[in-house]
Image 1: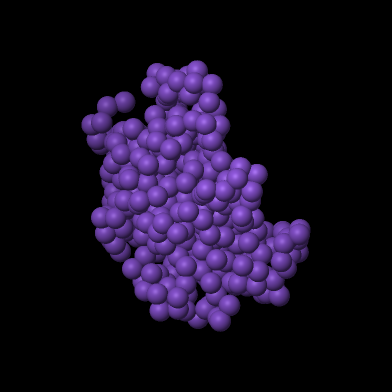
Image 2: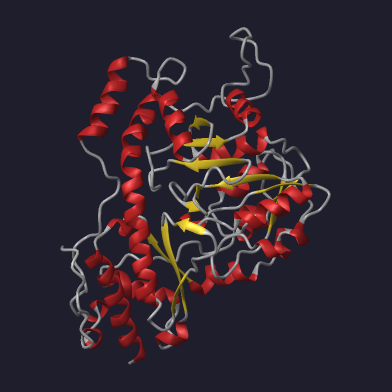
Length: 416
């Protein structure tokens, strides 16, 4: 496909939907993920041939930690086995302990809350803002108690949370700010990279992420004390200058392997260009989809200077589509070759293990999660949110036009 913008015919939307036997808007796939080539193979083989496959003996983790920390404007980085672990280590290193409370949004992957539970602390859910799906700063202070220890803002989909307001609240109440930047590789808030905006940050390198090695994660921070503590925690509690089998603090083996670190070094060379492409396509889609009644792209302009679009998120209003429920719209779009999904279908606090408080060996909070209500999140989950994954955002301008054309076609059919 070329990058030349297509002229979308007004009659196309009146043709039969693919669900009804008509021709789909597109039959070719969007860009594949992951992206890799000979560079990745050479780096992994270099690590393989070194015979030093563990972080203790190799050099690839150290090189990646330094390069990625510098990329996100931080002094320190500590690679780990996955992003769930990095969240736990960040909280652990920051002093979160049994009985503490941590404010989290309910519209995020389960690991954001699980990490809190694994520190024997209590997740306290604060609603998202309906325009951004990020933690709503206006609702944070009313959730703070004497037991509150930290806030975890999630940069949902790669759109930075309002870190100015969140950091101001945290300073006022002496709270730790842990960025959940699992979606935010390359995202920026007022010219500063996600990962450097709070006290400490957690990134994931799981296979769907914008920077990936199948599994993996990293903690980034500008604070040497936090960095040192994360390094000790992820290294079985070993402290520098001590005997090998002396363990000064409780920790675990959460170290990343060298083959994955080598792969990340190769993947990192593409991240900046890919991020610019996703951001450019996201801005274009926002403009074009905003012209269609019933489709509302999430709001930009609050301080983010770059959105990395791990997810392209928009809001669906069924009244503009003949009353079609979101699920019917998604099915029709998928048949047209556009891989929309509904994303999270329930808030975290309505996951079965939260309703039952089945937290295994960890602290069981007194909070009754059956009584928690976050209306904006519940609406997003039940009827409103639409997702496109980040590989779609690596496509051409013509690919973006296909998305817009398909939405118009489905709307025409839905309205009869």
